[in-house]
Image (cartoon, rainbow, N blue to C red; front, top):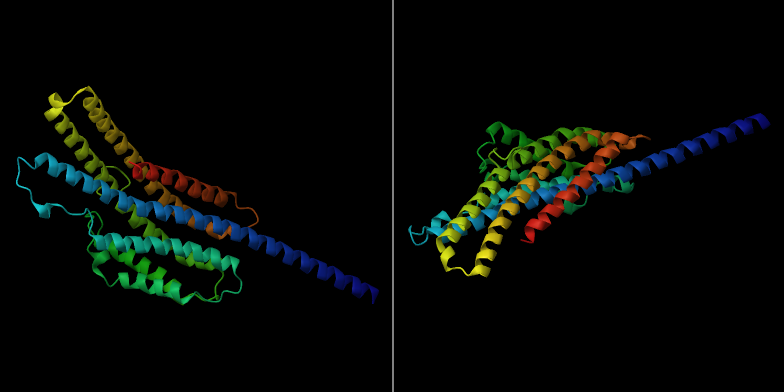
Length: 309
């Protein structure tokens, strides 16, 4: 009897230790996935800001060009257009919001054992993602380097993301969800990366910003040379200083978009490792999360600099 009682107590103690370790492991995984969600949020905000920055610089370049040529060429109001159709930009903003919400919901699932399905607002957002596939916003893409095959893969990934928000129930472990969603996360990030461009010479946001800043610099330089004899010393100093600042802004914008592209790649790499969040030791994952969060914050500061100009 005494021996049986001892064995029972030993078994109970063993189970208690295992449950405690399981709880610690779950808490650790929740912290890692929460940190990943923070990094994804910053990354998607930066990509959204890239589209906004491109349109802003493009608008400034068009205004600058109109001022320079107004007296020598007939002004054409129809020549003033955004770089991308507003519907295309809105579609990408919705997809970026979906990617951000996906990471947030992973974190929410980890932190709420009572959550059996997503709320109606989340499901409605999933429906809006699915509807993008039926619209022209993804198909009529203003960046010519994106092929029809790329768009087909992209829209399938967006559809899968939308379905996850609608259909998710606590029937799969988070680790399995991450595995299932990884190909779709990769495809979305890849096409967003193509939007930006891996190099300055690629047709994309990075190419366009550099081109528009170059137009701004050339137009300002032409205007200074045209009227330089009319300037006093202070005006001349201020105009040349503004010209030099445009060159610095072009460098900052190019560096910012290059960094935004690279952080999208880091997001893919980190998501690939995210299943290891449940392991006791996951130094590679933790390093990647730190890089994702740190680089995202650094790029955010660049966008703030550009916004303050």
